Length: 343
Ligand SMILES: Nc1ncnc2c1ncn2[C@@H]1O[C@H](COP(=O)(O)OP(=O)(O)OP(=O)(O)O)[C@@H](O)[C@H]1O
Ligand SMILES: [Mg+2]
Image (spheres, rainbow, N blue to C red):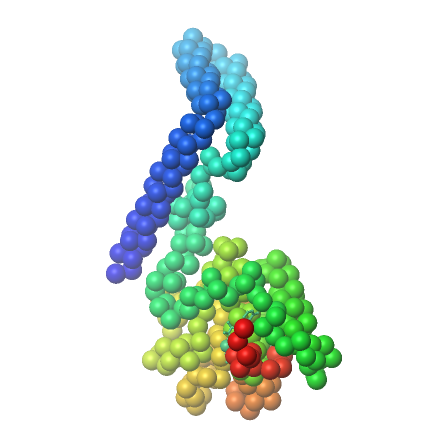
């Protein structure tokens, strides 16, 4: 089942690569037609490469027994070849720009630069690329919710949805406060994953932009090539209920394994999960503690106040949640923007 899934995903990777190669050929044909000098440049490059290859073969046939001087010649040839290729590429780029094309028009467009859309990285030992791991997460953890990232990200962040009215507890307007948060978290994602504080806790009443900001963070972090799992607390604990974390076999490839292994775990709406006495506390403690020990990032949002959290969860949980050395605690306040008059 699992290897089938991997196979299916790798077939999709092959198809995507093929598609991109076809698209590149089409761009090449278009550019050659519009820029005749480009076609000349390409054919001159091919002839010169072919000539060099011929020379190399001839030299190696004539040079039996003179390995060291021949090796030196080969190296020089390779260097000259490389320089010639670079020069021609530079000429190509200039020609493209001069004719109104983007300079990377004839460069293959990989979705993932790290693995060049093969799904694997590393020279000698091949390992799964993070983009492939993320695909597996999305396929296997069906509750992982990343469906809103195209609409909710730093590019679509619109501060005008927040009232330009002062916040009693902060001395600035709700709008200015949200702009400050936006800038703080843009910088956070720039520093990611080397942030001093690995945890983020958003607290505040409904409709203040907590989930939106979590989505902004998620989008940026995924674009950086890290792995991420985002779930509502309700879904997370509902799934965990069938088998508590303490009884997990961590080698299994499942949601439980992902909870520990992903670079970032996002738990939205903490406090909305069904209360199951000590089980929720134990599971939450194990998740926070294990991820803390592994220096992995965990982001949470909640409608509960810090006092409610203390009443709701065990001391062991809140001591980790409120550990300011490792957690940025951000309070949201102001008016519920879901209730604002629509434009
Ligand atoms: N920065 C923003 N730019 C544009 N729209 C936003 C922004 N922040 C929030 N919104 C929109 O406002 C609505 C409420 O935001 P969001 O869901 O993030 O609130 P919340 O604090 O998570 O609420 P709850 O506690 O009920 O989950 C959503 O429709 C969201 O798309
Ligand atoms: Mg929310």
